[in-house]
Structures are given as C-alpha cells and as structure tokens.
Image (cartoon, rainbow, N blue to C red; front, side, top):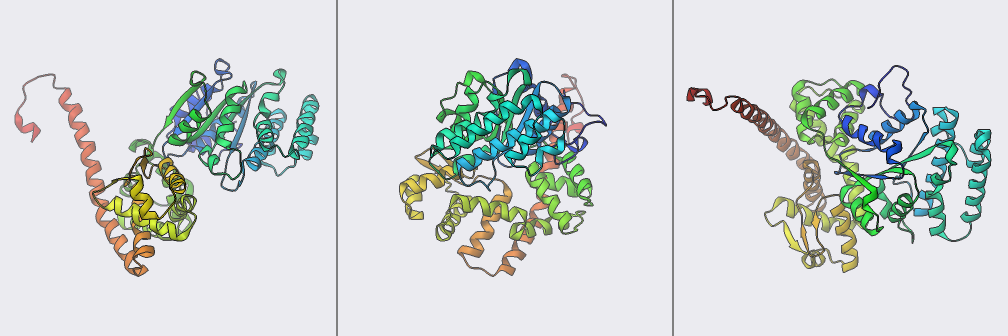
Length: 453
C-alpha cells in the first residue's frame, strides 16, 4: 500500500502526495507491479481518452524512489516534441542513465537536471562507472552506424544492462499513444513492446486503450506475461474531491454547485478538470455560479487550453487545412444528425481522399474514440461533450463562415441552458440510486403506498 509521511520527497510528481486523489487503487496496482513476484512482467495501462495517466505514473515513481529498495524506477514520457523514433529512443536512453544515477546517489534533483551523457558519467558512483561507460561507448558507436532499428532497440533495452547486484529496473513509459505517429521507418510503439517484453525487467506501458492493445497484437506479445489495468474517468465522488484539491491548489474560489457542474460537464475527466481550473487561475476567475463556469468554458472552447487540445488532435489527424474543414463538416453532421453510421467509401468520396490516406485518418480518429471504425463501416458522433461543442464551433466558423460574435453568444446561451438540465439529471440519478437502496431494506414488509409517492 502507498505510504504518506512528512519525510516523503517529491521527485517527478507535479502535485504533493496529499493532493493526489482519486486513483488510490490504480496507484497500488502499479506499485504491486514493481514487487519481486512480478519481476519480468509487464502491465498495460489501457486509458480512456482524457482519463489522465501521467501524474499517476509520476506518483508511483516518487513512492518507489523514496522506498530505497532494490527497485530502480525509470519514468519516460513520449511527447509531441519528438519527431522520429530514433530521437525518442535516444531521449529514453538519456532519461534512463540520468534517473539511474539520481537513484543510486539518492539525489532527486539529478532526475531532471539538464545534463549531458558525459556529465552524467562524471556523476556516476564508482561502483557503476565501468558499466555505464561501456553503455555510452556502445551507444556512440551505434549512433553513427545508419542502422536505425538497431539503435532504437539498443536504447530501449538499456535497463536490462543494469548489473544484477545493483538492483532491478522498473520502467514506466507514458504517452505511448504518440509513438506510432513519429516519422521514420521504425514503428516505435511496436519496438517498445518487443524490447520490453523480452528484456527481463518489469514495466508499465500506458496508452490509449484502442491503440495500446493493437500495438501489443502487432508486436506479437505473449499476453500470458502481460497484466492489464483499465483506467477510466473518475466517479462523481472522486472527481468532486479532485475539483476541490485542484481549485485550492490553483487558488480558485468555487461553490459546491459550481464544483458539481464541473464534474458533470467534464464527465469526471481528470485531464479536463485540471486544465479548466488552470484556465480559471490564469484568468483570475472565480467559479461560484453556473454563469461563471459557462463563461470560462466558452472562452476555453474558442481559444484556451481546451481549444488547443482539440485543435492539436485535429491537426495530427489531418494536417492539410482544406481537408480538415471537410473532416469537421463530416464529423459535425454525423454528431448532429441521426445517420451516424456510414461506409468507408462514403467517407472517401466526401473527403476526396485516397484509400490509404483515409485509413490513416480513420485510424487516428478511432484511437481517440471520436469514431468507431472496423475497416468497413464508420460510426461517428462519439466523444465527450466538449469535443462536440468544439466541432460545432469550428463548423459554424470555418465551414459556414458565420460571425464569431454570433457563434460566441449562441454557445454561451446553449451552455447556460444545458447546465441546469445536466445537474437535474445528475441529482435525479443520485436520488434514484438512494431509493433503490432504501427499497431493498424493506425486505418484503408491507408499508403504506404513500411512502413511494
């Protein structure tokens, strides 16, 4: 079980241990993966889009770092800054060496310091100097060999080179849903799974649930050596606690009604809750009423964090602006209409795309769960409410060319109308759940019918 004490040091975690709420069971499961009984096994964290996994892995890293056992935590996140599989693999190697030395020296500050490999060698403990030097020398030779696949596999396999007497590596890789979109001949997601499952060290691989399972099948993994943890949105109680903690940390004033609305509007998504309250802090906005929340929400859809999140996803799906506008039209018409299922051929004609190009677009939309695609039919209209609102805005502005002021005013009015209905539906569900529990307690006793009016 996780420990909470005053001597706990924050290493990679973005929030203090006491403020990390809502993922206690998942954190304990990841910690259990690092135990000796699971040596050499992998854990696939299958994440629902926007469920948030980064801080969960960072909190696990910090706990293992503070325990000072024979388990050496390694955390690496694939980001959009990486352009090729080779560059991402090299960054992984650097992070591995740096975090290993930080753990062996018991100096958290080394984990994220801007250090070169040569500087890290100088910081290496005497007992580790020889094998780390050999690792870096082998990497240097491969770096200029023009064999990208060999270089990627070497870098990813670095944790298995730790001498047994020094401890066991426990690798946590975050953001693997981005791995397949890197340029180059090497498919990084597949290589990660192939190297990790054959490396002899325990690992956690977190990614979007549709993408990570597909990558595991492509890599022909032995699923008997893999465990699975499904990561979904928070339930209303845990999400409410998260809103309280984040609002307090961001120094944003909230009311109980506003907190309930935020939870329901974002369906318990840690990702959206965090960026929404971050936006409130940046704009020094109090969230005390439905109007406060919806004003900020509309601002975010038109140009804030939520806008940038969906804009980045759409640009990755369809880099060309003209095609992106056609795609927005098609997605919004499906979301707004009753005909949400159509054929691949219909999409190809509507988007004026070659079959191979459309397959790539649909695959990316499928991974993000904006559509469901089985290679024959496409079912659109899915995704969170914020995605649908964003689509509607882009459709009216980019496709229909409507005045921005009009679209802003309409979206604010629609959001304000929807808010009380959203909360009424939620409170009714809560009340119904309580009634079912109450009825079950009567145990077939006779009671006046008026009690159920």
